[in-house]
Image 1 (cartoon, rainbow, N blue to C red):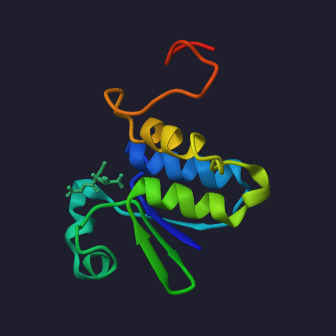
Image 2 (tube, helix red, strand yellow; image 1 turned 90 degrees about the vertical axis):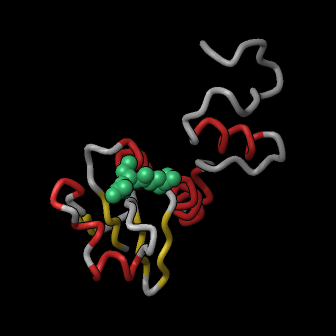
Length: 115
Ligand SMILES: N[C@@H](CCC(=O)N[C@@H](CS)C(=O)NCC(=O)O)C(=O)O
């Protein structure tokens, strides 16, 4: 499995963190956004949107960091990284989008912040 990333980016860091947390082996391929590597033909062939992160796995290609998180989680379902209950899934997706204006909170919690 390969992860095409530009590590300073939060979208890259989150997929790298997930891969590490799930102990998934991968090859890291740095896409240097400062030198415009994302615009090169080879990378555009992977992601026509010319944005990282991109995951490659045995011929399967996936972009969008949240989709990549879900794919990684699917490789280690026993870890419970991606919620399987109907309320947990959308709540997690909203949280991983980084937008506080959308989403919900797990049942039993009275606030979206704190523990
Ligand atoms: N919604 C996408 C956003 C990806 C994205 O915007 N990547 C930026 C860096 S954070 C990028 O590759 N930009 C390159 C460019 O716009 O030329 C995701 O979550 O993966």
